[in-house]
Structures are given as C-alpha cells and as structure tokens.
Image 1: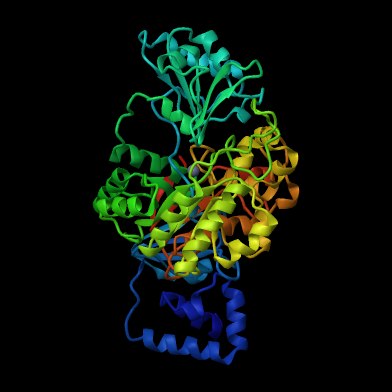
Image 2: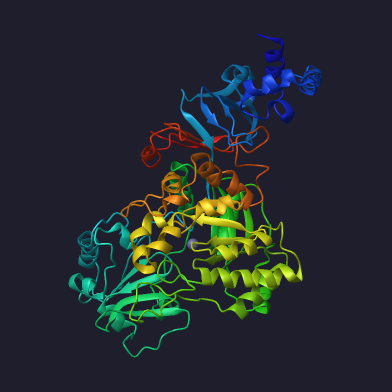
Length: 584
Ligand SMILES: [Zn+2]
C-alpha cells in the first residue's frame, strides 16, 4: 500500500471529508491529490484529526459494484459505506471494506451496476384500482372482452367504470373504443371508460343516464365529441367530464399508499413528486412519515380549486399548510395549476390535423382563462408559493409565460424554480422568455405511449417535436424526468429508454433529433429531479454526505444494448440505507 493509498483510505474511513473522498473515481482523485500539494495537505490534516478518535463502523457497505455516481464528474466507483441513512464513503472495494465493523451489513453486488435512486417528478399514482383493468389490453377485442366480463358480474343498473391507466395507442387499431363499440358488449349497463386524466368514453346507456345528447350545450374548457356522422360518439373531454358523476371511490388509505410505494420501489423509484394531490392525501402521507413507514421520498404539489387570487389565498389559509413544509421524507413542493388539456386537448397556436367535427378549426382546450390564471399566480408569488403549471400546447405555454411574467414583475421569481409541467410543444420564441424566468422543466415520456395518436391529432411534425428533450437541454434548462403515471406506465427505465431512443411502444421512432445521451437521461432521472425540489445538495447522486438512495441493476446502463434498458429488471432498491426492494 503506497502512502497515497493509505492516506486516501484513511480519509475514506473518516467518512465525510468531501475534499478527499467525494468523488467515486478514487484512483483519479488520488493521482490528482498526489500531483497537487494542496490535496496532500488536506489528506494529512484529516488523518491527524482522525487519529484522535476511532471512526464509527458503517451500518451497511455495498462492495464490488460498478457504481455510476452521477456526481459532478460522472465518476465511477466500486463501493459505498452508509451510516445513519447517508453515504459516508464512496470509493474502491478495497478502500471501503475496512469501514465494516462486526455488525455491519455487507452487500456484495458482484459486479452489478449501481445508480442513484431514480425519481419521478410527475407521478399521480401507480395505476390499477377497483375498475375494469385495461392496462394490458392490446386490441379493441381485448378491451371489449374485459368490459364484457365485468358486465356479466355486475347487477343491472349499476355503473361500470374502468381504471384510467390505458391509452388507445397501446391497441393495435390505434383508436379509441367509442359508444357504438361499447354498446355491443353492454347494451344495458352504463359504462364509463376513464382514460388518463382528461377523458371519459360513455356507452349509450351512460349517455342516457346523465342526459347527455345532441342538444347538450358545450361546456367552456370542455368538449363533447361527435363522430363523422354528427352523432355523439361518447367521448367527453376535460370540463365536459363534469356532466358525469361517477360512483364515489373508496377512500385512499395508508395501506393502499404503502402498497403503491412498494410497487414503485420495485421499479427503482426512491423519490416521487405528486403533481397536485389533495390535502387529505397529504395528511395520510404525514401519518406515514410519523410512523416511519414511508419507503419512498415524497414531494407533493397541492391542488386547490380556486379561480382568483383572492380565492386561492383563502383556500391556502384554510389548509394551514406552508409553501415548503416538510423534511427529507415528505415535503410540500408548490401549487399545481393547469391551463389546457392533454393528448386530445393540448391548446395550440395552430389547429389540429384531426378535425373532430370542427372542420379544421379545433385548437385544443383552454381550461383556465388568462385573467383568472394570472390573478392566481400573482397571489401565489405574493404568498411565497411556487407555481407548477400543466401546459401541453404552445398556446398554453404562452398563457403560462404571460402569467409568470406578471408575477415576476411584482417580485422576481428567478431562482425560485417555478415549473413548466409537460411543455410538449414549446416554440423557439418561447425559450428566451422561459430562460429569463429561470424555469425548470418537468418532462415525461407521453410520446412513448401515445406517439401514433399524437401524429393523427397534431400531424407528424408536431408529434416529432413533442417533449423536445434535446432542445431543452441544449438551451441550458434543467429538465426533471417522469411519467405522469398512471397516464403513462410508471417504470422509470422505460422513460430512460424512450429519452435515449425516442422509440415508442407501437409507432417506431419519432423525432430522432431529440434523443439525449444515456448520461444525460440518467441525470434527468436523478440529480435534476433533486434540483426540481431544491434537494440537489442532499440527494440525486452517490456522494458522501448525501442520502443513501440507490438502485442495483443487472446490466450497465451506460453500455448495454439499448433495448435492454427497457427490458431489464431492477435487482435491488435502497432508500436511506434500507433495502426496500430485492428481486426474489
Ligand atoms: Zn399529470
């Protein structure tokens, strides 16, 4: 053992000497330290301090890994030591092994790849639920068979509802089931297919039940769709969904949330951000945090129904919740707002290609008018809240920018990390305005699921530009990744695969010029998500002093055949030094 190696190992034992042991690329560091007089001085000083007291042994060490640390240098390490839920050392297996005491848990990952815990910056829930499960259907026939099976076991008159985690692009026909399709399997029971967060499809019995017919006036911010024959096809979009009152769902419980979190852990997720959930859900999460039963770190945006600044202020006061309440397990991240629809309602400057009975004039749905929206965001800024606004189309982004600029004129929002959620179709003229406001982009892989639909709605050019990751990164934006689960399935490795290939489930590659590199995609899923929630100093990479959240993968994410990124299964997930998932 050379003097340099001994010194470096001692520094590692010290645990948190950031100057010495911070990067995983220990060998490289050591070379630098030896070259650099200051480095050697720092090492010697640390050793001197440490010899006075023996370092406490690690709780856990992970050895023999290919550890992609995602630190500033994107360095590679072999082993980590963990104590009190945080990394205390990152280095070679040889360096870290001596940090184990008699009761230290030693995890030998046998050459597997280790990455920082993955995060999803926009996840509503893990999908599933008590409704008809359509998530695995791959054709209209599959889908109708699933509905028919439910009809058989449902008493007459009772409403049949589906879960929301499916999309027509997963069906080989690439189209929605409509009223006429549903009538073939359910002539009598009212059926409501819930699809994502923006759309219902009703059969004839359901349209009758809620008195929706050709004379029903269109609702502002919503749409009642017709087929080419001019008849209602059963589709209700955005605010038009309020015509239907679904049977009350069973209340969310701590147990259900815990089960969902375990499902997400198994996919490699260690942090999630709920993009707009109820106060009630926040209270359940607080209860879990109190009991110490959270297995995933949660950032929650609040969503309060308020269409003016005054009403927003009153609604916030009624909750008693502050803008950044919480800790490393559960934190409030801001206020969720929305100004347009989703796949079939994103509000565009130019008309859709899909006419939807509007003869080429349909430009999407504006769900919150500019005056009300601006009044709300200005008040949020006055109250010290950060806004995160759902905006899919370029016209929606225009409205968000105007609102944020008005708030910024009252009191600067620069550095406060206000967020554009989704940002599917930004225009080049909008980038400088977004930059001037210092916005963070929360981007997801909707294209992966819905590619073929987006081509038919918006045309090939806009579909290929959807969520332009390359353009965002090249212009210096911090982009945090996610899925919008259950709108898009939650596995984060699917998102990584999509971002590096722009491949889609059933429509091939769309917008190949918007691919990003594997290291970029990994940052988007880790450290950039930490930045989104002001936590980049405490998580998002594997470095001493940071929270010990990590994922073990069977293959090297940076060099494996690209299709394997989508296919591979997580071996182990750790949150705060505790194993929360292990592949059987
Ligand atoms: Zn969403």
